[in-house]
Image 1 (cartoon, rainbow, N blue to C red):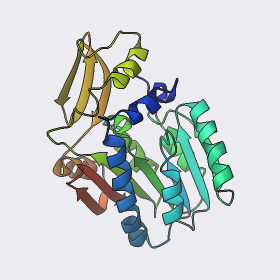
Image 2: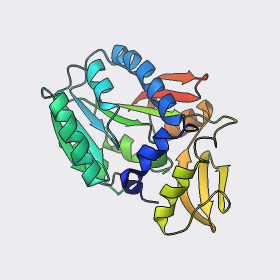
Image 3: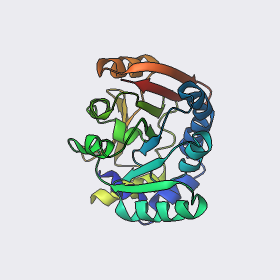
Image 4: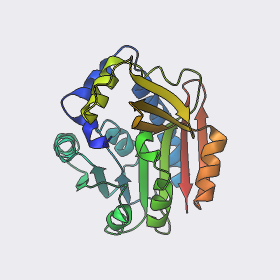
Length: 247
């Protein structure tokens, strides 16, 4: 499924409000813990932030709080309506920050590179709480090839654990997956863990794939794409990984 469907018709809000959905809370908790560590490692050397897939924009204020020297915040999303709404609201709250909207599908060839090339000076590229995009195994290579000298890449992901299906086996998720045109229910959907990803299938159609690696699997993937690990934090109690890389 196209990720732009995720923020239409209030479906995502219904998922976040569901009592069995705790992934969003854990993703935000991990980011709040990780960002001060990353800021200390980078030591205010970053001029820009390039945020891939901002979604509902809840992470933006935490980036601004931890990186007050950012000149430009390039905010990307595949859903134009959601992107415009989020940035309009954020500009009111943070008028001192230079926000640029980038409505684009970053999974397409050379899109990340073209957007990054429009920014001057060192940039932190962020892909946080976005394991659906990162299930695309060419995504890390696209990001690596787009980076300039002095750039960094930050990522947060849910790590594999025994209750990994819990936040997905809920009615609002089935409603969202029904945007595919199939009638998706608890009775006809299969949720499996395969190739380091949680996958949801209906009538043998793959509707959703979300990357959920172990620490060692993530390290192997990033090293194979040429990244150098700066730091990695595994928050085992909440089953989340946060990491920072450079070229």
